[in-house]
Image (cartoon, rainbow, N blue to C red; front, side, top):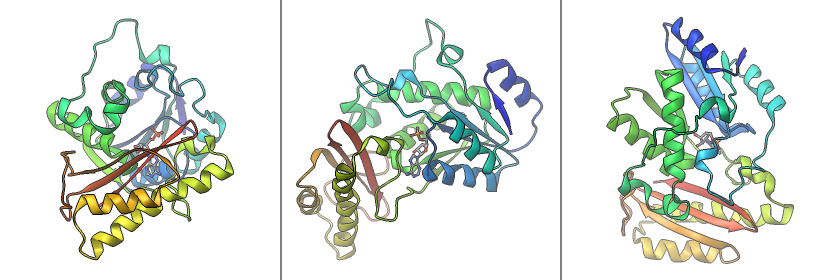
Length: 273
Ligand code: AMP
């Protein structure tokens, strides 16, 4: 595996690749969720490129940019073990100049839920993903369903800007007790981690209610709220795959999303119905 720090290095390498390129963009502190994306990329592509870059433009003032977990050595080891070909680890000053072309996320899909709570967040996400796509020129790019709204916006950008990349959505990887893996889980104390289990429990219970034929979102939401009674819920939302709000579950075209705050840690999770 080759570790790349500069744009020139990456562009020179990419020039000489004439093969399928699977790309997995990450912010590092790699866990089994990231590893599942890398494995999918490894299975389906001749070349696999992973990026580790904590992108400053997607963090709002007061968010955890400064304290976002960094595990450079472990990340390198994991990528080696997963047989990644190239690991791109740029500095912020390598990725950005003073005065950049800005990307504006589309209104309908980005100004609700995460976009409403974190204004500008998705502008930053799309900006960095587009820049990384321009550098890596992947044939295939892998994103987790864990960040469902992000995935949906990246798919829309790929279509709207005619990028022609195959975007591959990947299943949410969970701990055995149901907690969705996240780099931010390290912020949780033992007690908070136990509290956080209510999130996946409430999503599971929603799935069970739907399995029993209950399709009214109000009813499902009520039961989810009860399960998460001890948590500070930011939202429970019911949307279709294009992120339009829905009142009734549409089988095969619904995502139920949750955002909660536990102490100062914000966690998101969802289930695709
Ligand atoms: P991040 O490093 O948090 O920016 O995440 C990088 C990629 O990994 C994104 O596409 C995430 O959706 C994905 N990801 C993060 N956590 C998980 C998980 N638990 N299961 C599946 N994919 C995940």
